[in-house]
Image (cartoon, rainbow, N blue to C red; front, top):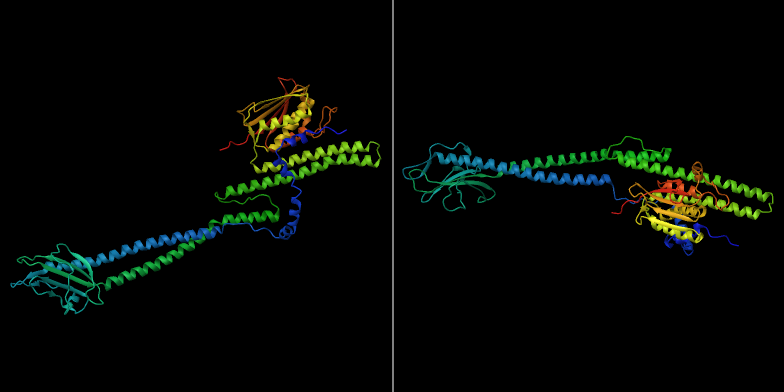
Length: 499
């Protein structure tokens, strides 16, 4: 006669098929994976190249070089324009001084021609083609030029009376650009509009501007190179903490140390703290794995010893012994696999499950095993906890099945009776005889059973406690005020609000 199905197999039938598919690959996929095995094995010896987005140092240096170049160009252009305008203004002011001196010393002969009461101070006006010239013209009078003009005359592009000094460039002399200032005046005792003109070759001021520009170019080039080298030094020094972190990680890998303890800048310290937290988490997982392996080995040791002794003694009830001990070993393996799955899922940090949906699914599964038991579920329909649905189903399945198995025929489940608390509570109550307070703590030990007349391995509450603890929850036992039996208070972390 076949044995009745367990609650685990019934609950598994209520889990969506896509969840069960994750635990077992289709048979048709095996050849595909096997065909790819040689390629995977060939590449297993070499570490996979980690993708990157380029060098951080190169990026910082290029950005700094770009900004340095742009700022130096803008600053150089602005400074060049300022100095060029300054030199041109000084040059114009010198021409203006000569023009003022000419007008101040100009007088009229009795015949109406102009003469100077005192000579101009610059001797270059007396040297032919010296590059410095003056000229006075008036309507109806011959031009009165400086000796430096020799046989040439200055021509004005402006017609009419020029009241204010007018400065402009002139190219009327081949190969000799000029800077000219002119002004029209009426001398005392004359009705003629006299035009006074002073010109000077631009070669002198152009040479000064060229010299200034050369100095600016060399100065800004040296400054740019210096700033670029300083940017490289700053980048190297600024990123040195990251190199120290890399060396610390290499030191961890080669020496077996488990933390980065070097003092580092405030900007890098949060990353180091996260790294240390990751190392601590990995160390905790490794320690949990070792503990699970040791516990599983210890749990399987006794059933294997019983089987060995029964087989050696040729026990007549060997088949019953094998079935009984195999069931114990299976439950032990299930227990430790549940812990391992919970630890792995907890690491993702993205789990969430609706408590009411899970409780309703488990209640339907358990009701098929215990049709005579009356189930009642009440509470919040929106409460969610930070657990995987499969782990929540396993916790509630153990608790509700125990309540149905050992109770008097009624099971009451309340979801989130304390909505203001930080943890989401689930109360499972039955109308059984209850458990004395002094014996409640013993039920959480692996293999502990108070009622040996009913089938079981004593691992259900141990699984509930271990899985809840892994996720940061708790479970405790009390007396039900409404039904009089046992009250199990399960507290689990709430899932974060969805934004």
